[in-house]
Length: 394
Image 1 (cartoon, helix red, strand yellow):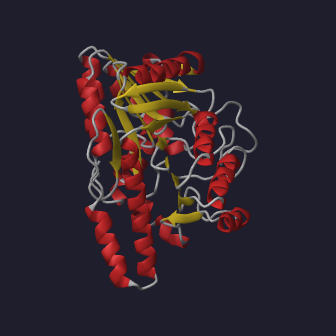
Image 2: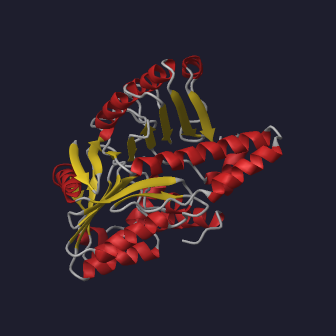
Image 3: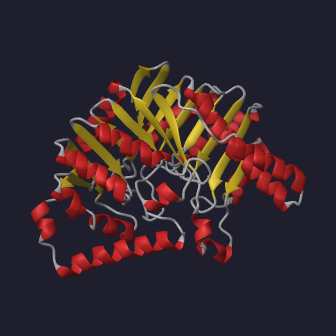
């Protein structure tokens, strides 16, 4: 955990749910007016229950508590917790509930993938960490052998109001949709227009909240990455759980490596989903041929979505560098020019590479058998076909 000050922002780097949940619970227990939380997954097992209890404590003493979860990542809350939340006064909304076979329609693949929290307009949290215990995973029975690797940032300063504004806009939009379903068309359409008109968030100095949505922020996160990579002078480290960037982002990494920048990627070695993992491996040849170093993390699941450039610039957020994050999901990243914070994150990533990762050997990769080559190519084709079905270009 690291405190730094940058352009009037007090920032802390938080590693894993251990750091994040303790900081969130502390802030929620001190809340006087409002707590807002957005997450893809809200699991009430293990440490996730600590956050749930803090939300209820805040609501019980009169704080307005509003929670938004994703309809696929979380779905409807367990009945026991839904009852407890309702009794305490915690308001919960489900973003795009997955209903029957409708989920298989590409239009339903737009998910709420942001992990944001704001308390009293004084402290905000942004990162890649779900409300999910570090040692628990939906795909594994029992405990993980090591904690999931992920990061978040807490911050105080001018940007907190931007985080609150974007969360309030989503809440208003969800309420407008609810009114449409209840046939209050006039007020619903008015509310919907209001949220559309206010979606633009101005940049705030050297620390910014960068969003991706399907209205006005369709490519902002990818452009932010490309701009930082294009300006890099000596060092780039990207850690990303689901890495399948489009041509322009791949080209930016290749060009950086060719002009002498040391480019290192920390990617999944222990995977949850077979197709994305193998599709990513299809890209290794082009990247390593340009001099990009690739490390696969094996200690546990890698869930991070972070990057550091030249030990000065960093981003921490929810956006993977794959088509579903960059083209479909609602995402949020904090971007900062903050050397102390960037160097703290870089040290953590280098430690993960050195102690818990294996570097992919270019010769071994090139000499892999035809079966592996076929599987990688097939997985890549499946992923690209999924993007094609959405009607997006990638």
